[in-house]
Image 1 (tube, helix red, strand yellow):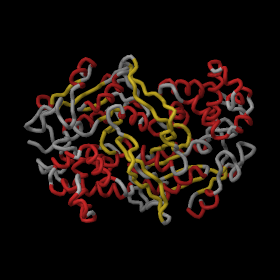
Image 2: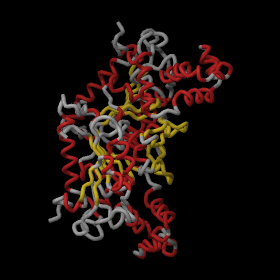
Image 3: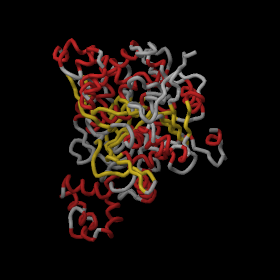
Image 4: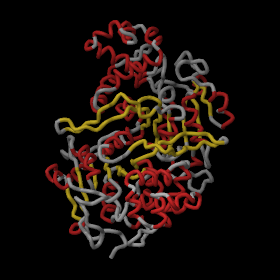
Length: 287
Length: 287
């Protein structure tokens, strides 16, 4: 690191070019047993259910209301998209922001019973602080929804809303009774995952990052784009290896699958972090 | 201004929320007699012409090659879109960046014969510096192409690439012989104009700005979105009134039309700047 911030060093990176990007799910916070944004969507279905009596008999909603996650997952991608659609759109951006803020303040993780914002990784908080101290701008570049992250990441990670890149719905500008709003539409504007990550980076940041952290093959192209250029470059993969303190999963996981990164990462000079042996603390409040 | 930066003031704006947005064409630099990006596109046609002998007999290209702007404009929006398409896409983002850098370094404005980057407005440079000194993040939010602006705005305005919002083409991530590139596609991803400006602001910045500067009705929704909220807000319209030192145009102009802003702006509390009487200097090197 010092090499990139010392004037005169062969690896010096000018302050303006010090951009570091971080995946969120599984890299900055946990992502098991289900993506936390999916937990938000399921909770949202419960809240909206009284207005939708038909959900009692229709999948995937029946499964959500019955707490039968298997029935939900059996509806496949189509069912999950229905859940995302009814839980994530149809409101204004400001209404959605309030919904997310309320949820993140009150929801608890199903197994640890802690607030989700306590499921962040202490060593990653340290990395973020260290990089910012050295003049790096830290960005989130996540497959998760940008509007799901912006309301709470500043407090959790010290990353402001304008430094969050994520998947997003289309929005439409409207003036309602003289009040301008941005309405969230049921149309996807960007899937910020896999080859979509360099695209999202280009759209929002417009420079190639110098440093990238990820944990799954969804981050492969982001690390490839970041590290495959002149000058000092750093790619890091967080490998979930600690079944006791967190979760252990990689090649065969339904979430955060990691195979190509393990196979090709070391050859490409990427650092593979072994959570079990490399991290003394995982979650901040963990003993 | 001091009101918003003094702790304890009723109008205090927390540093994180100090976002100021600026239109580019006609607000930060001139836009006559044709948008400077259109001048870039026309120059690009000249460069590419040897590879396209058919252009000698086909409009709108024939008009460009003959220097017959009337014939070009007669082809209407369809013709202009053809010019933008052949001049702006089909290359990688890094190739396009080099093309823009070369052009901005060598091209000259048709009437003043100065580099385009000397056609910026000195009073606006002063505003940008003043706001940044007071902790405001300054963003460009322009109908112009984001990739046309990013290569030179840092030097011209002190605004880094990641603080530029603009219209954009779709890009696609590809690995060519082991080298990752972003390819610029002939598809529009966002028209960052009119109601598209609040959308672009939301996508890239994710917070509502506190201050907005524009000059045409293409900026109306951006000023409306910025000023129609709680707390101190500032909307400013630069009115081109100086036919001698710059250009004078508003309601009937084919570029930068301004009618609704003049009619409704004052009622909405927006400041209308009269370039002729309010600005001692317009362009930096002007006597």
